[in-house]
Structure formats: structure tokens, C-alpha cells
Length: 300
Image (cartoon, rainbow, N blue to C red; front, side, top):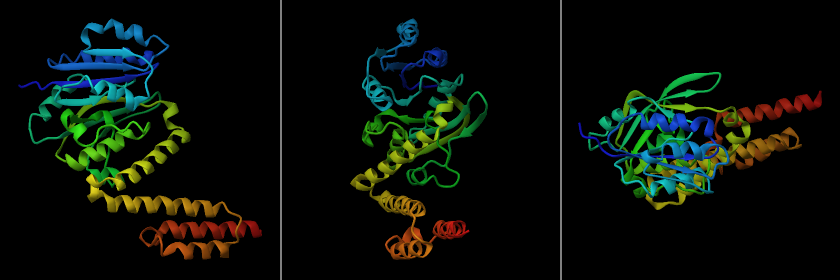
């Protein structure tokens, strides 16, 4: 079997309690053509001591302040020259033999992206989720059946820059942004059923605060893609999602206002035509029903 070079970057910051498991899961693959890079953001825990233990097995590592996860991955990419690329975060770890399975899937030169299964786990749950039905439009719309968990989706390194690379303006949804743009230009996906990665879920990652930040960035990403001429076939979808977000925000703000029901009704009707692509929906009817129910509550 031919062993294409696989480049892996681990961005890390104060994850010493998990970092060694991440490192050993990668090095213990015994994959014969691996380059491994760790970009630490200046950790103040025991991360540097752990990294130093494996120094001779690393192509490069550094511990210094950076601009966040996206910036750390880009810093690592500078040192990569492999055929296949992904980043594995410092609290996740690879399933044994996964690199061999990824390399085999990429042996077909037509394949531009390999999508395998990921085990999501926390202290209270676990589930194996297949990455599936990935396309630029499907991922942007989260179409029915689409499943995407980043560490299980591997790319050809040379194509990352060609689609615009990792945008460091984003800190939460930058992977979603990257894979939409990558899949738009490089859509030959090979799905494999093999479990590749274990993805650790923290309690903090489930807070409403972070969900809101992800949603805010997704809206900004859609607005960005709508302006880029290189993605014209996505512009119709972008416009729909932009209008949908604006209409949802409008209905929510109107719900919180102190206007009488009849005033809210007239305001909705006045805007329906401007947002006709998204406003003739069960969402709008549900909002009007909620406004009416509030009227009854206030009356009572």
C-alpha cells in the first residue's frame, strides 16, 4: 500500500489533563508517513511539559500566545506539506488504525474529502455519529440527513488554500465556514463507516451563551459567502437564509413589544411582501398565534 503523507495539527491551550491522550493516540497509530505539529497558545498548566516528552516525534511545536484556535491551526499549516490534512483538538483522540483507513480511502485520486464516523462522548453520554451527505449547499442549510463533525472529515491539504483557507475572523464556526467553501469547489466525497475519532463534549460547550455565538457567526459567514463571487451558486441559498434570519428576529422582537395584537398583526402584514420567500410559513402563523395568546393573557 502507498502511504501518502498525513499532516495533523493540534491546537492547544491549557488542556494538560487531556493533551497526552491526544498526542499518544496520534503517535501510536504507527503510521509510517506522518508529520505532527502542536501549536500551544502559551498554556499555564502542565501542557508544555507534556509536549516536551514527545519532542523528537514532532515536526514542530511552539508555546506562545496566539489569536485563538483558527489562528493556531493556520500557524501549524505553514509547517505542513502532507497530502492529507486535519486538525485534532487537544481534548480529542484518534481511534487506533484510523490513519491507515483514511489513507486507503484517499488512494482513489478522485476523492477530495473523506468522511468517517465520530464518537461523541461526555461524562454522561456517548454516541457514534457518521459524517454523511456532505455538500456545500447541504451543510449550509443543514439539510435533512446531513451530519457533520469536524475531526472525522479529512481534506487534501493542497486544496485548502485553493478554497480560501481558514478565516481567522471566526472563532466558533470557522470549521463550518471552511468546509462549506471546500465542498463547493471540491465535492468528491468518500464516506466510510469506520470510527475515526473520539470527540469530547464539555458541559461548557452546551451553554446557551456558546450556542448563541455559534449562531451569530453562522449568520456572518452566510453574509460573507453571499458577497464572494467565487461562490455564486450558493448566493440564492445565502439570500434565503439571510432573509429567514431577519424575519425570525423581527417576529421575536415584535413578540417582546407592548403593542396591541391588532398593531402587531398590521406590522406583520406590512412586511410580508418584502419577505415573501420566508414569511408565508407556519413560523409566521405560529408567531401570530402566540401574539394572540399573549393578548388573552393580558386581557385576563
